[in-house]
Amino acid sequence: MKITMKQYNKSIGVMCGVVAGVSVAFSSHASIFTTTSTVGAATDFPAASISAANGSLSFETINPGAGTGGTIAGAQAQGGYGGAVGWGETFNWAGSANGNVLSAFSMILNGANIADTYQPFLLDLGTGIFNGYGTPFNPSLHPNLLSTVTAFNMPSFNSRSFLEMDLDGSDAVTLTVGHSYAFGLLNGASNLASDINFLRAGGVVTDPDGMPFYTGPAGLSDASASCSGWGGSARNIFVGLYTTSVPEPSSLALVGAGIMLLGMVRRFKAK
Image 1 (cartoon, one colour):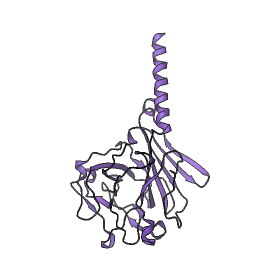
Image 2 (cartoon, helix red, strand yellow):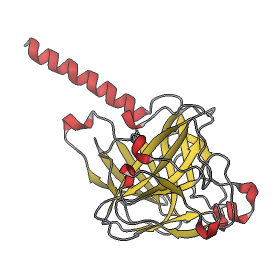
Image 3 (cartoon, one colour):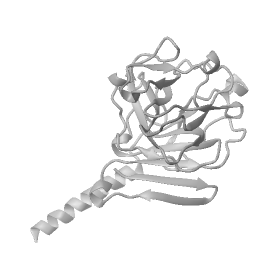
C-alpha cells in the first residue's frame, strides 16, 4: 500500500510522504489531497475531484435549498472527537450517472493536529435508512471496506479547506444501489483530545438519506453509533462523494506495470 499526501496552494503543488518499495507499489493505495483555498461563499463541492483525475461529484450532504444553514456559506465549525472515536456521515446510495465506483471522498475541515493519525473508513450498513436519532447502528457488525493501513497524518491546511481522499485498487469500492453506508474518520488511539474540527450545517437541515454520527470510545469495535444532534437538531457534516464507471487510470497503470513485471520475470527465468 502506498500513501501519498499532496497539498495544493493555488497553482503551487508540494508533495510530501514516503513511497513504499517496489513490491508494495503494485497493491492498492489511497491518496490524501487538501486544498488551502478558502471555501468562501460556495454552496456546493467542486464538480470534479480536486486531483482532477478521480471522478465527478455524485452526492453531497449540502442542501442549497435549505437556506444559509444548508450551504457552505452558512456553515459553522464543530469540534471532533477524541482518541479511538470514529465519526462521519451516513448516506443512502441511489446510484449515479457517473457510475458507482467510489473514486474519492471530500470533506470540509477547519483544522486538525498534524501530528496525530486518522483512519478513513467505509461501512456497508445494508438496505436500512439511517437518518435520525432513532436509527443508530452497530459499527462492529459492519467490516471496514477500506484498507486498514491507509491511516495518515493530516497535512497542514487553512481553515475551511476541502480534504479529499482519492481511492484506488481495492479501496475503489463499487457502491450497491439501495444500500446505506457510513463514511468517516477514526481518530488514532494516541489522539488524547478532540483535535479535529470540521464544518457542519449552521441551521436545521434534515437529510432523508443520512445523518452525522459518532462511535463510542471503542471506535469501529463499538456496539453503537449515535446521531450527532448539535444543539438538539440535525446539522450534517459536509461530505461529497465522487464516482466513476471504470477503474481509475492509476489502477490500470498498476495492472499494466504488474503485467510488465511478470513478463520480465519470465524472460529472466528463461535465460
